[in-house]
Image (tube, rainbow, N blue to C red; front, side, top):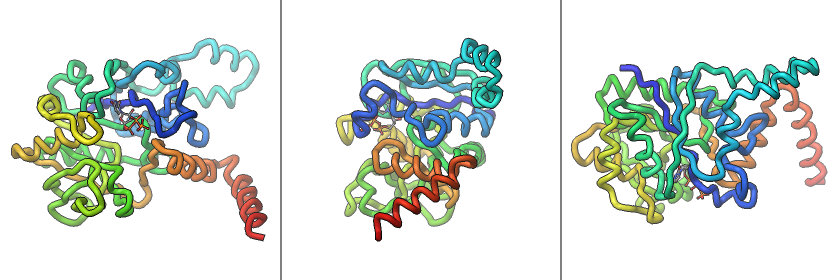
Length: 296
Ligand code: UTP
């Protein structure tokens, strides 16, 4: 079974990043040299995805423009001998096709995924949140591992997880795992539990492989936390009805960089900038000087 469609929801308003996101999508904010969503697509291309469907909304056209060919820009760079800059546009030619549809009402992530139903039809598919990078510079094959698990286990859902501090569990969907280890069966999922309700500190980390039966499940769940139709609740329903769902933990070197709030956005930017081959070493020195001055 070839799982080659990825759905990338990017319709959210990004209110936690205002004013930066007032007139530009949070998925287009740069982390180091690239906008967040370009890392997401790079990761998907690396694991052999062939079609990406973005679930968009008003104000997201810069994202569509970003993945279009820009012949005018290419021509100007050629004519002015800026070969080095031309290389930066190579991603435009990645072997992947882009599709866009709008989520016309912001009713939550489950609802955003439901907007992909006509496109996906009867195939399993990947969901990759457009505001989260996995691994420094998106060097992660987690989706590949998840696809393999989905097929081998005959699963209805495979989800990526990472451990979060206990005082952050209320921000995420949290798993109740059946066992320890890198791969585990999911007994239950709880969306944004309080610290005392949380069955573990394993938080859903922005990547899913889902069976098409999830659409039917989404239609049957009621709005949950925050009045939104949660994908977590739909997967939970599939588990309760006998479907097998599995979790795979991200490894140490494929941390999740969540660009949804300023704390993690700032951290991600600094980490990626420090890892930049050209600018990283000088930036490191600059930061050391700043920090030393601060302490003296
Ligand atoms: P978030 O809840 O983190 O995104 O959703 P948001 O709504 O933009 O955030 P705030 O709270 O206003 O700051 C996770 C992902 O799901 C998408 C978002 O675009 C993001 O990639 N999403 C969420 C949708 O596409 N549609 C929705 O109705 C909700």
